[in-house]
Length: 265
Image (tube, rainbow, N blue to C red; front, side, top):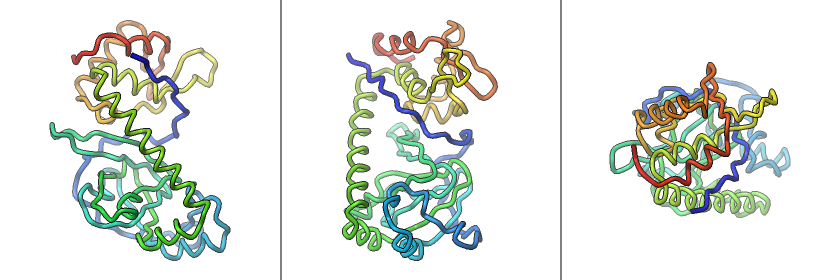
């Protein structure tokens, strides 16, 4: 089996909160931030090619809302088709497994957007998105999003790249879940999150280290399995916990563990 080890730099995010994923839908309330600074889409990568006047028109078409950590922004199966631009904060893309456990697909940060699939095909939401930290979003009606995508070539191309990335990510996810055991998926998630230690120690560092619950959701396993697996890695001297960071001393060794025989613990 070939292990995919091309892990790109991850986006910095705030520490994972102990959110109760899938909780009641948040009551949408405007945070009251006034002026252009509080209602700007300049940070949204999908719209980065747009001139200021055109971007302003999109901003004027949006509703602006804030969510508390742990609140559901959109929910799988709902029929609303608006597109959300994440201005600040972090959000998790989640789905409910047959076991009743939430599986995390992705962590979104400022500059990202979501909800575009329903806006394009008119079908119910395919996943739940919940705020992981206090978040502010701009909400663009589906018909405005479709008009934008069909009238602006650069936005359309960026959208196609985004959809291509979703397909590739889903392919990778299917591979992980079908060919790797729980321990191997946890190893893989740790490798994906790790970055070279900026101090030059030679270690790879995960900072801030997500909670065990968040890691379990990303690896489609249980919090207890994450705790046991990281504990055994620590006992073997492969990783060490330092405050809010996890240091990986031997990245190649951790990669080799993914190749071992598949099996749950």
